[in-house]
Image: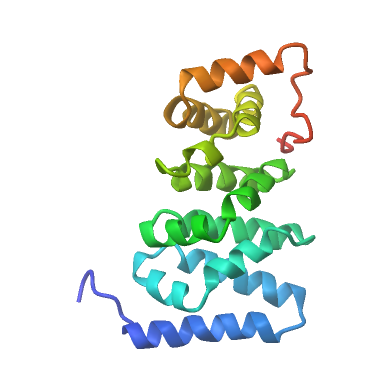
Length: 192
């Protein structure tokens, strides 16, 4: 029994469907937060991907990125971060126009939201999407994050710059930043 899932695909689908229904039916913000957190965690397991796609959880997570409730945003981007590791889900996020919504999360004051947004941008970067995920404003933002005192944010931004951007992009962003203050323009650094 080791290594086998204890739930059949239909049981898994029914359970996840119940969570989505609970999210849609409840008026309680706290209950919605709990369901979103659970869905984000389930998005980490590859055996749940097909059911989550069928239940349109990707769109639910994308919708959360524009909410006022910071917990909704954090759980939404966390779920997208987990989903985006899988190719079909990544493509679904890209086809849904999710990159600008993910980029908007870079302006959060919450470390976890920003870290998930950076990781999601990494996961969403393909040959076709690279110009959008490594746009000049994103590269400038990563340069600023690479200067922060927060080691997790600094290191992840540095990996993004080294592994996802060309040296030309980084040099151009640095040049455009000359004379600007080193705080993120329009993008406050998360609180350490």
